[in-house]
Image (cartoon, rainbow, N blue to C red; front, side):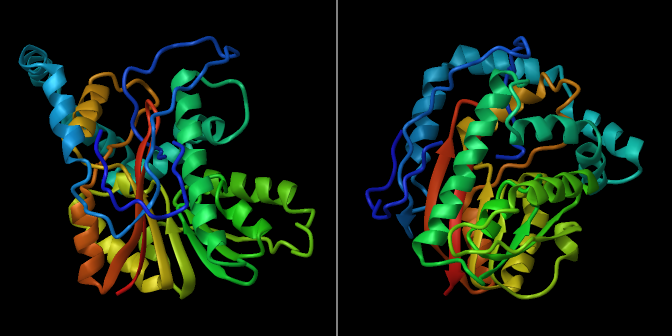
Amino acid sequence: MAYTASLTSHIHFHTNSRFFSTFPPKLPAKQKSTVTTAAIPPLSTAASVTDLSALDSTTVALIGGGSVAALAAVFSLTDPERRRRLQAEEVGGGDKEVVRNYFNNSGFQRWKKIYGETDEVNKVQLDIRLGHSKTVENVMKMLTDDGSLKGVTVCDAGCGTGCLAIPLAKEGAVVSASDISAAMVAEAEKQAKEQLTVGNGDIVPVMPNFEVKDLESLEGKYDTVVCLDVLIHYPQSKADGMIAHLASLAENRLILSFAPKTIYYDLLKRIGELFPGPSKATRAYLHAEADVERALNKVGWKIKKRGLITTQFYFARLVEAVPA
């Protein structure tokens, strides 16, 4: 696995959305598991967007022509798109309604466990929990390395159960947190009330303002806008507009995480779609880093730092953008 040589930041990625997984094994509910984490590069300053090209070619080469042919034959017998269309018809809408319905029902129960601390998770869910927590950890380090967050306004777009909003509030940030799922927002408010009763030294945490909103409905101006593991629900055609919208809300900084589109990760995603299971009810869109960067450049923003977070079942690109 090759990375760029320009790795100058002191932030190191250790290991998302609600992201796809492949071949999730069934484990007893109380069984503990050990997660093996891949070696991760530190954030780089404006490094090349092609730093994963070596991973693509070498990894796919290792799969072998016969294996690829076999996988292609299996793919031809499945129709993930038809399954997604039927799901959309059931809830009377497109991707957005599927996502809203999922995260207000079965998806909420699944991701509440993943984002929480319960032992009632299997190996895959535990691995995703680790990956997501490392994403949050690195975002917090990004923000606090630049100074105190006391009084800094932050929009947490797609807040889930408050995994980022609550740590931000503990550091004194003034947080506006939103999610498309009313169930997620209610859980985030509950967690915030339980965790923000005690101050952090001389910092008195301000209770985040939680709202049920999709990304398109967000408005206002914030010092920093953060959107973690949400772009996976947007095809690139819509992601461009969403990135532009989020950038319009930010004055100084925009932080995004997304599932990277490479040959290898796209293959893993397609394999995972062959075994959807009852809990994998939303379509997953991968995004090429070059496409995300072009969308940012188009509205006058540039990437300042970038990095990759990965565990066995969790893959996320994390980028920090600033006005050009």
